[in-house]
Image (cartoon, helix red, strand yellow):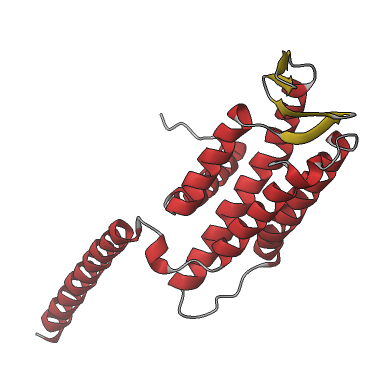
Length: 219
């Protein structure tokens, strides 16, 4: 008895394979892997905002609380704010970078410009460009909202202009990657070569069989 998967399962598998391939390409570049892992860890460890939290009192805001004049204050809304930052910034920005790396890799691999459908073009524009603009605008807007009452916090804070500039650096770097930056290319090339050799062998065997058949017909 043959089990037939629903059509929706096929779409889910295709989407999963597409995302998985792009994430593999992203993680194969040391710069992006270390940067995103470090950014995720810093989100839980490092200070988010640094500045004058109240009039004349300098302090820092963390996920796990607030330190002002050497006094520790338990977290109030930090957990809620941290969840928003993860879902609305880090996840979309990661998807943007992996898509940018994927299309850069395709550009380096292809010697000719292949035509793409309108759907693929729309996906490429959205994942590689629109998501990046959204991520940067969200960082600036969210930092301004959360630090509006903190003097100099928007400029000095790691989650302010510094994060926006760092995001821009990673995005520009993804557009200028070279083939040697992708660490898994040697394995991929070996697999491609072995597949090509198998295809050539199969075609040679088919040619030999076809020639024998023609010879038999002639006799």
